[in-house]
Image 1: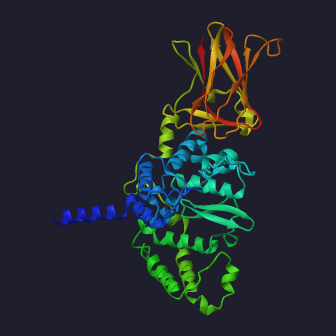
Image 2 (image 1 turned 90 degrees about the vertical axis):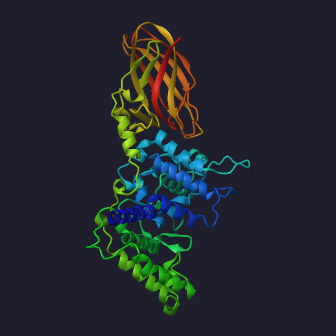
Image 3 (image 1 turned 180 degrees about the vertical axis):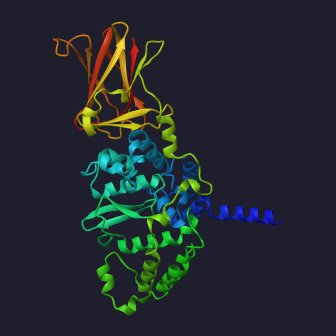
Length: 463
């Protein structure tokens, strides 16, 4: 009986505090007031929003720390104002186009680095003509500080990372949670004193994040109940009830400008000051050591995550593939002059089922490959690529007979490969016809100065 009671207690504990319970509660609270899809009057369905993040978590599509988030933190994920389809598109797009942003070693720029790499700082180019604005349009057409901050928050939320908006003097930025428990400001200055969002000052928000983090240590791995005096109920006991008194007395809490708050008489902000003091007391105990979260050790965590998936598929030796029907597939990562292109060509791991690597090309880059064919023949040439910008240029192609001197007269034929706008998904380019000579051929691809694309491989099919 005692064993059965013990098992039942364990079952109840897991079920009432697992990620799915917290996710459902976060959505119920955050969507109690309807949230509309960005630039539309369409209300987000809370039930569908729950199922979206539930399945994304089970499929290993979210950040591995997602299962460690508190209900309060999850509220700043599920309030994503994009449609569920667009959230899915964001994850697919970054996995396809820039997987290095997912594997970024710096927590500050994981996921949201897509803004720095691809959202050009310029006046935004929306489609218009009655078509609602969208995040897909934003990454394609660029934007200034406001739209760039939108995109950064959207990218983080899509992968399950909480974000908070940030405004600074004459500037818009963003902040987000990291697994160390620290919230960091991106796309703006790091000063919380100069930051605010809506009617709340950045200092007050940052203090609350640390106070809540420390009070929630008991839910995370490494917590020692005998050593740590506080538990998850401490925030409610020390801060929440004081905030209720603030509301009863109709005190205006710390607003976007600290100066305006401090100018009010003390008797008009007494309880607000006590709230702030309690947050400071709780926050001072937070250290990176005692709040580091390990998602793999928590209840209900899936063992499939982004890092594991891509690692399983990356350790594959890549070589040119010669099929019986004469088709030749050249992996883009076999580029001979990869290092000579500097940061214009980046080799990354690939999330596609076949694994291996892929390359990201930006700016004026030249790619060089060699291929050995048995007979002189015409071939169709196509590339498997991903692009996110509607305005695309061609890829210049030159085929040279490797048996002749490089500068030999007439050595080489020039072609153009049209690059489509794939909206973040893998597509094959339209084929062009090229001539390869018997033996070794050198194939050059040159990108335009303003172009950017990700390439998996090139396919040559004998005609």
